[in-house]
Image 1 (cartoon, helix red, strand yellow):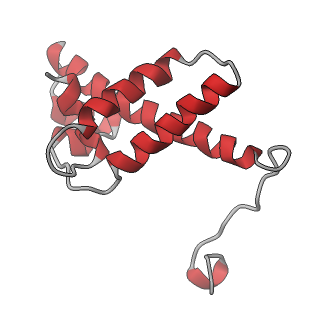
Image 2 (cartoon, rainbow, N blue to C red):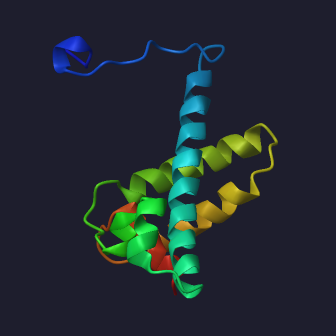
Image 3 (spheres, rainbow, N blue to C red):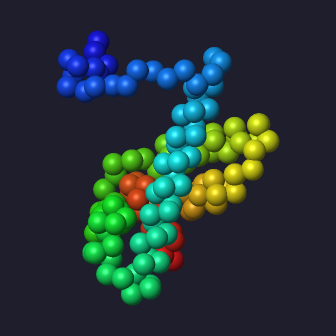
Length: 131
């Protein structure tokens, strides 16, 4: 079974060794932390710009948050999966005694989104911030 590569029209970077066995999971959680925080930052920045007088349609290109401006919350990324991963990241943060206050706030925002009806895309986080 092909998983990618040249045959699938996709060029993959070679795997990167990040440490001893099991540490790759922590690297994946760090990636999910960045994903969640980036989404939260875009969701917060767009209404900030709008309240300051900027036209959201023009800010869209700068923020690349077009689904929040439209608003188009058709699911492309599962809020449930992201919230699970953010929770796993919080657990890892506790285990290694690391302080990650931005992660905690981001996870809290996504928990509020998880309570929303339906299964909107995680970019619907903007609805939590605009309340």
